[in-house]
Image: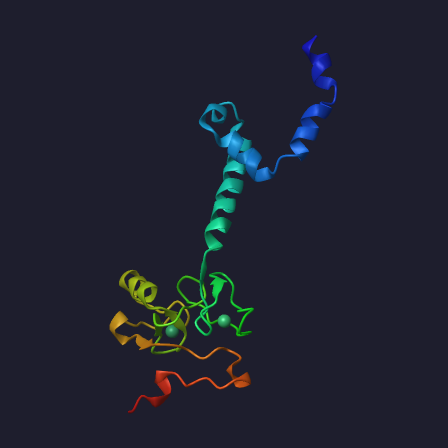
Length: 164
Ligand SMILES: [Zn+2]
Ligand SMILES: [Zn+2]
């Protein structure tokens, strides 16, 4: 007798399903009272969606552009305001900020100073060139030129005036 009900398409459910975002549905389903009733296969899927969504949300953080100080999403490698490509930290993958930059002594790729030195305490190699370096060798600079620096005058970074 129950089967007859189940065979009928549940249009109400479908309508409701369309009106609710995947994330919202996932959150509802992740509430403790729903968790135990879920098939583990779906549970994993939903957990992935929620985790992915939260990760994306985290990445939406804005940090100032190193050239014009306008807030740019930290995952964005281009500043809409000053039209520069933003160098990214080789440790975090986020664009760099002013005054907290360290260059690898071998490959000159920039990283966020704190992240770079922390990373070197666990892994003593530069993630970019794989050279063995120590945090004391990192070249601290105030800024690095934008990748498309030819288009505008930008003072050369410290590495060029370092005497031998
Ligand atoms: Zn900018
Ligand atoms: Zn390097």
